[in-house]
Length: 238
Image (cartoon, rainbow, N blue to C red; front, side, top):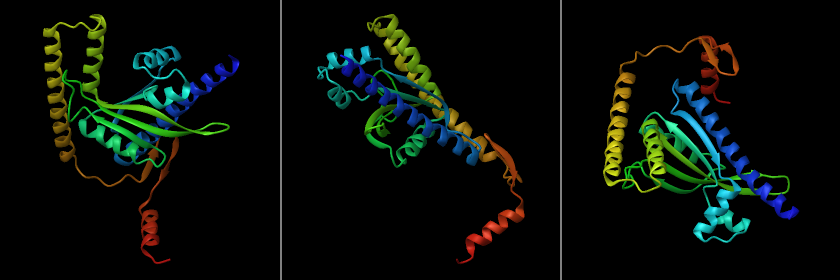
């Protein structure tokens, strides 16, 4: 029993560490993109980890073997991360940035944005694997990542509350209302991104500021002479 307890503890810790690794990558991408483009495609990030009881219930429901190796191989959403973006194009931009990480392996993609579910649900789902370096092993761990817009997330949250309230037996009229609401949310997403693009196109082009500022670092000057020196260094043969 003691050995099983230790193994289960290490099992759960590996998923927590994998979640921490992905969250760190997301935060780095968010800060880098914000500093370079003065804009971040990531609005909000949240994470969750299934409890051992929840994992066991799902394994039984799915008919998977009740042992840790089998559970690891068959249940891929033990660790989950949700990324909320402003616009539809941002969801694909974030997907590409994550998929471009050398140690992130994309195992599966389900694009419910281009092909929504019948009830109107939209989101971009990724199953990725990331290596977790434990004290005595390197363990590849899967994480489910959901990427969606603010409107999609609001709709999904409302849909979840409605299905919970009705214990899954939602009246047909309400199901149809939800589908129509999903269509309206999609139209809003498209319209808001169009407006955003129009505003960006109208912004005047300005020279870069001489003082570069980044959260976590003290401001430092970037005078024109320094930049010109770097440009000469790049163009001169070594």
